[in-house]
Image 1 (cartoon, rainbow, N blue to C red):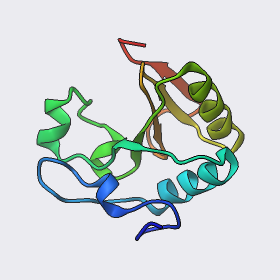
Image 2: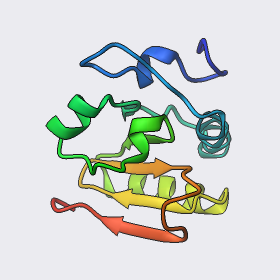
Image 3: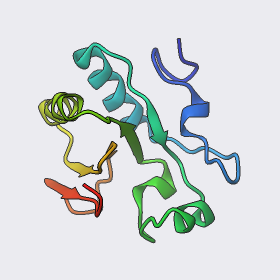
Image 4: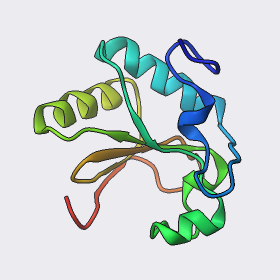
Length: 122
């Protein structure tokens, strides 16, 4: 049981550098809907990032992580990646980044929409 929704807790989204967290309710709503349809636990590997942490991990200056509109979801195996990607798209996700061990999902409405991109290691 989570403390911000049925399956997610605030600590999963907390910046490891500054200890702060900002979360857009639309992000949590999407993640909960995906968790329900996917039917398996979803591990968040990165949530809110302060500017310093974002820079340290190579995030873009306009990253949706900076304002609590993004999360990276662990998916190590190709089948999990496929199933999660299909579920996010089915539920209307409009911005998805694909990394070797994660999917970046964000709910920004100001960044380009209907996009899927690859990270260098993908």
